[in-house]
Image 1 (cartoon, rainbow, N blue to C red):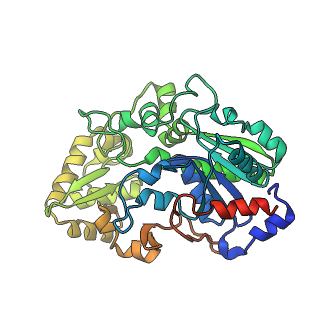
Image 2: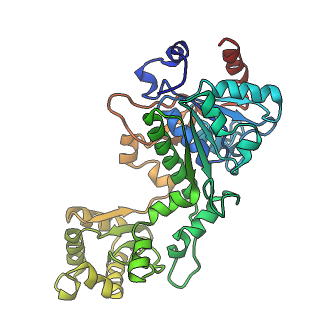
Image 3: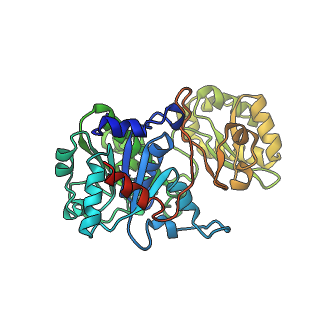
Length: 388
């Protein structure tokens, strides 16, 4: 799976307890969320991820967003930098650049998210890197891909959210298109990049993996493009609603709290109609019928929820085996019994954060440490190179 020497690989292979990717070495040159997120997922399952940062400020997430009040380090960095070793090298310095080349000669994966062409200008053309290490996978994360008319544009998630069709369908019917209030595109792209990287590693062939924000988010649009090209239909903004499944949305209860309700299965839709007293209306016996009479159905569900407390709504829906859930904020999710039982939130070096993205029954991942101080591992990694 790698171009590493047998001795080097044996030194890194510390056993299944460190995860199924314990024999992979990943060099992370990327910044912010999408590229570093890809490397973090690999690190969570045991890969030795060496985060190479610029002198001075290091990765952008070290200065982005909320901080841990105990040490003033950002929570973004502690999450996105977890399980990685931090090295500070100046890629404009010939000595540091040579160290990086030597590291890549024994690595399995390089993750970078420079604007297309930047890696080549640094003297790190993927063609040359793969020639020197025929098993190296070079994962390139960008805004619009490595080619095409927009390849040189800055890679910001907002642009992908605007151009993918996401913002156009997000928001109230008479309101403005809305962007997501979280790093949605970056997080989705991180998962796509991690998946594509492992596909390439599994191939056993050194190659370039071209992942970008626009195409990653566009994958989430489902059949919307097909519907436009075949039927000439555009999905309108419906708030929390979707055109083909009614009722579906968020509804305020008598106590001011909110629930979310879904009827994407016909059997569940029938149960919900019975709960709210619409089960005798023959017009509502199909997805198409309920969509045609959206206002009637949505209005009745909203009225019914408004007459009951959230606990009453949830208890009624659970008894009927219909689909409803409380609309949580972080304070409620933090104490939810299922979230606690499943370990959705873990504590790493005293920092609460998401647990592993998936569970493996035999070779699980492990969170070993939160994001480390800038350059904490420079001496160690440099010494490893000297001992080759």
